[in-house]
Length: 83
Image (cartoon, rainbow, N blue to C red; front, side, top):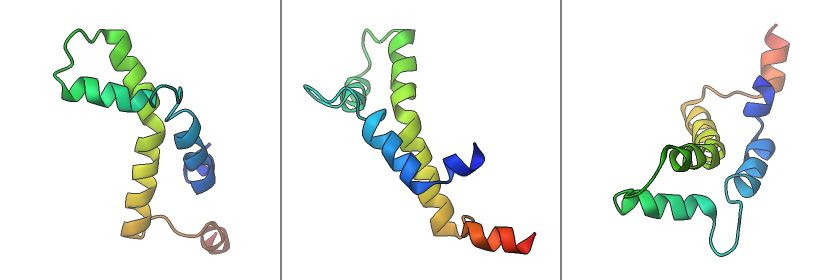
């Protein structure tokens, strides 16, 4: 599971599917972000859960970007050779 969370292809696939679904009339996460930016009036607990559910892939992508930019996400071959 840990290797899946560090796999760029898997995380990008999650962002493009779960992170943006449903796609019509606009990506769901975008509608939730606009709702929150507008004051989140009338937003129930289920709406917050739905927002975080669709945001998880984007958080994982941001995490990978930060880890890669700080150098803490090395190549898998280097870690295997070190053991």
